Length: 150
Image 1: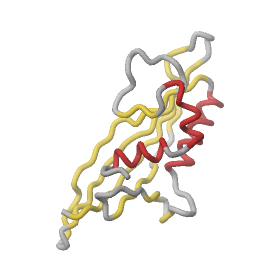
Image 2 (image 1 turned 90 degrees about the vertical axis):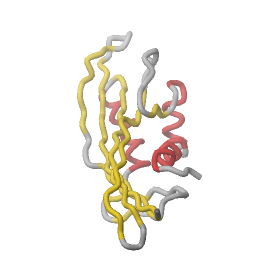
Image 3 (image 1 turned 120 degrees about the vertical axis):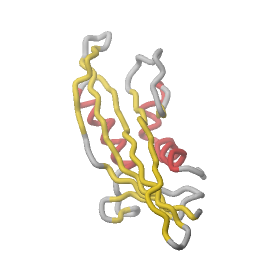
Image 4 (image 1 turned 60 degrees about the vertical axis):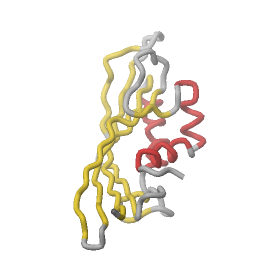
């Protein structure tokens, strides 16, 4: 089991057979950056990842609040939105992990951890594939809330 939020997010991605199948040929989930030599599509990246201590309660618990974005690059709008839908199916709330509009994330050093998608931005990326297809970028920003004992 993961020991950090970042590790738990990667494990969530890697634990979904549909996402793995869709991205195996292009490297799976890229964290922090996409290598410059990667031009095959689709690409899914976790960019950037940030956590900041929010408060310390009297019971010695710290809440780390953060943000990250899951970004999809794919040729053709329909294909890009299909892949973004696979991402949302893993990272957005489900009935088994739902608390309002938050998704529970589990890792060993957290008392509790939740993520919440706060947007869905589609833009035409200024790049065409070798087949002259437009590449789309879909950015899904998330907020994270992690409570840990200190």
